[in-house]
Image 1 (cartoon, rainbow, N blue to C red):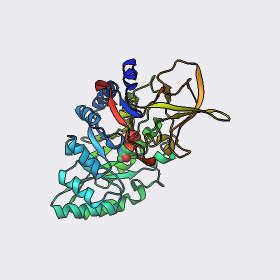
Image 2 (cartoon, protein in one colour):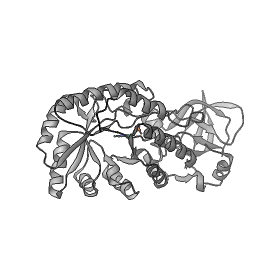
Image 3 (cartoon, rainbow, N blue to C red):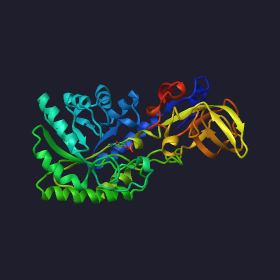
Amino acid sequence: MIDQRAIEKFKNLETPLYYYDMDLLKRTLELCRRELDKYGYKAHYALKSNINKRILALIKEYGFGADCVSGNEVMWAYEAGFAPEKIVFAGVGKTDKEIRQALEIGIFSFNCESTAEISIIDELAGEMGKKANISLRINPDVDAHTHKFITTGKKENKFGISLNKLLETIEAIKNCKNIELIGIHFHVGSQITDIDVFATLCEKVNVITAWLKDNGLHIKSINLGGGLGIDYEHPLENPIADFEKYFATINKHLHLDEGQEVHFEPGRSLVAQCGALISRVLYIKEGDNIDFLILDAGMNNLIRPALYEANHDIINLTSSEALHTYDIVGPVCETSDKFASSKSINGAKRGDLIAILSAGAYGEVMSMRYNLKDIANHYYSDNL
Ligand SMILES: *Cc1c(COP(=O)(O)O)cnc(C)c1O
C-alpha cells in the first residue's frame, strides 16, 4: 500500500501525516459494491469513520448513501453531494436543531433510539409541516464479541430501543401524526470478526419481523448497520474485508418478505485499510527492560490504541536493519499514549519513517489538539 515513490515523497514532508491509498479504496469499494449488488442490498457509508471530501466523493461514486450520527454529519454528507433520500441519521441524543436540519433536507430515515425522541421528532415535524420517515433502532441484546467500548447491541448499552419496550413504542407511534414508520434498524458493534455474530443477529431480526407482522406491521426497510471487522494484524496480506462471506451470511440467515429492502452501514470495512499514519522517529530511549521508540505522532493523531486498546501493525519504511523490539510511544503527556508494546520492527534510528497501518477509519477524524499539538495534514496516493 505504500510504495517506494510514496516513501521518497514523505521524506520531504512534515510529519506526522495521514496517507490514503486511493487505489486500495477503489478496489475495496468495487468489491463491496459487487457483493451488495448480488443480493440487491443498499448501503449507507458511516461518515463518522472518515469525513475527508475526496474519500466521500469516491464512495458516493460507487452508489453508497450516508449514515450520519450528528446534524453536522448530515449537512456534511448533503454538501458532499449525497442524495437526501440516501441519508440516514442515528444517535441517542439528537438535538432539536439537528432534527430540524434533517427534516429540512428530507432524509431517508431517522434511526430512532427512544420513544422520547420519536415524540420530539413528531412535534418538530408537525411545526414544520413535514412528515418524518423513521426506523426503530432496536437493541437486540446480541453480544458482538468485540472490545467492550465498541459493543453497542447488548441490553446494558445506551443504544437502541429495548425489546421489552418495543410494543409500547409501536403503540406510541400510532398517536404520532407526523411520523411514518418505514423500518427497523440494528447496529450491534464495531470491528466484529466473528461472522457468527451476524448470523445470530439475523435470527433475532427474523423473530422481530415475524412478531411485527403478527401485530399488523409491514416493515419495508431492514437496516443491519455496520460493524464488519478488518484485519489489523496482517493488513498488507489481507487488505480487503471479507464482504463476500459477510453478505452471503446475511443472505443465508435473514428471512425477507416480498418487497422488503435490506440496508447496511459499513464504515471501518470501507476505509480503514486505505489509510496510514506516517511518522518520524524522534528519539530512541533505552529503558531498563526495553527500548522506547519515540515518534512524532501520538494519541492526538490516532487515539484508538489509547481509547480501545487497539493494535495497529507498524512498519519501519526506511530501514532494513535486523528486527528489534520496542515499546512504540508518542510525545503526548499520557502513559496511554502508546501505539505498541514489545513490537518487533526493523531496527530504527532518528529520522526513520514509520507507518502505522490500518489508520483510515476512526483515525484522522478523531484527531485533537491535546497538548496543543498540530493537526496532521493528509495526502492522497494519486496527488502526492
Ligand atoms: C459507527 C456506526 C456504524 C459503522 O460501524 P463500522 O464498525 O465502522 O462499520 C454504522 N451504524 C451506526 C449506527 C454507527 O453508529
